[in-house]
Amino acid sequence: MRLRLPDIATDPDAFEAFYRRHVDGISSFLARRVEDPHTVADLVAEVFVAVLDSAHTYRPGRGSEIAWLYGVARNTLSAERRRAFKETRLAGRVGGRRPLDADDLAELEERIDAEATARRAFQAMSGLPDGDRAMLELVVIDQLTIAEAAEALGIRQGAARARLHRARRTLRNVPGIAPFVIGGTR
Amino acid sequence: MSFKEHVLMEIRTEIVARNDARRRRVRRHLMTAAAATGVAVAAAVAVPVLTGGGSPAYAVTENGDGTITLEIKEFRDPGKVEQDLRELGVTADVSYLRPGTRCAPRRGRSDSGPSFSEQEIRSKDPAVRKRVREAIEKARDGKAVKPAGGGRVRIDPRHIREGETAVMEFTENTDRTSGPEKPGVVWSFAGYLVTGPVKPCTVVPDPSWSVMPDPATNPEAYPPPGS
Image (cartoon, rainbow over all chains, first blue to last red; front, side, top):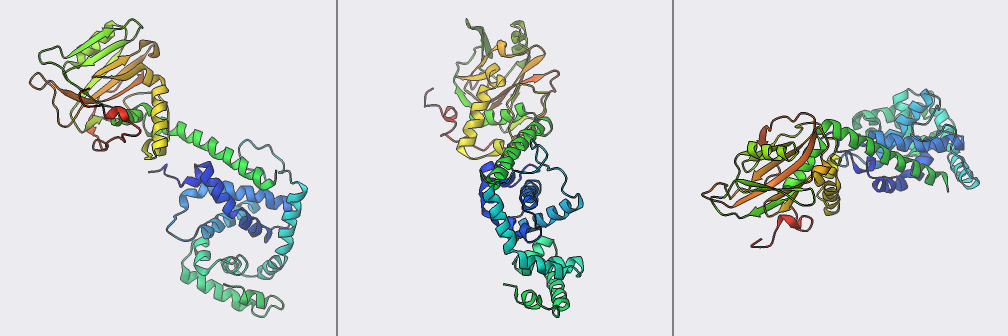
């Protein structure tokens, strides 16, 4: 039945519950990757619009909600980077940035500051092959389990383990980053 | 309001807008809304009728308020019913069906029915079912052809526009047969309007046949004994 979407895409209240469960997690996820509060705020909106578009790919029985959502967020982020933050896809929204009040800014900046170490780790990882880096990011920085990270990237757990192992070996000797990378898993 | 609440509001609005667009698509592509409501009405209304043997198969009566009452006593001569209604200015298409069957949906274009999402039509939530039923009753379809109890259908020509046909599908209930030898007729009814040409009824099995309506939301399906 092609119209049987999960409720979050069609039921505003179901969506709201989902949004409130995850909006802070997604804000932090983005703050680890982006330093500008306005951009983080815009990306939060884009990720949750992407949730509407991708809701049909979520299988409640397969993998965790957060793994699926981080997968959506990663895809959104790379799509947004490709098109360099052009207009929002939300209908009815005039172009330009979302207004942020002082509290918003303070909260987002705090989040961005809190993730400074994570962003440094990203820089250290930047030399890794894409697939290995993505795996390390999700496990070490976003604190997903290996199974969840595999789900977010749409790969098998065996492949996920191999990537993670490779990435850690490469970074073992990078000063200042090694303990973080090696010890960062749950 | 914080940006998080802003974003939430924007996306809630977006969901509502997408649902509306989806409803319109459902209406155009999936099935005519009218046929879908027909399913709902058929489930909702199974009105027992008792008539004496030997009487005419049906009666068409003009009421003082401009409406027409069609009383079905036996399932025969649908063409004559149509002819009688035509003389009163109503273009009608009448089908009589065996138990467990229905006409295949999409018999024509519908401009008058309420439209629902697939989810709403198939919902088991009593509140949703009630809303769907009320929307059917409020829609022009529901006002144009409406089961009136006691084996009668009330037709209101004022709600039927030029070029529209009142399509009425009557389905016999399982344990009764019509005809002079067994005059009791129990039927289900689906009525709606079609704009332009009406395709003939292609009889297909009705998957919802054995699904009994919920007495809480569809009390008219459970008339008191002796009615």
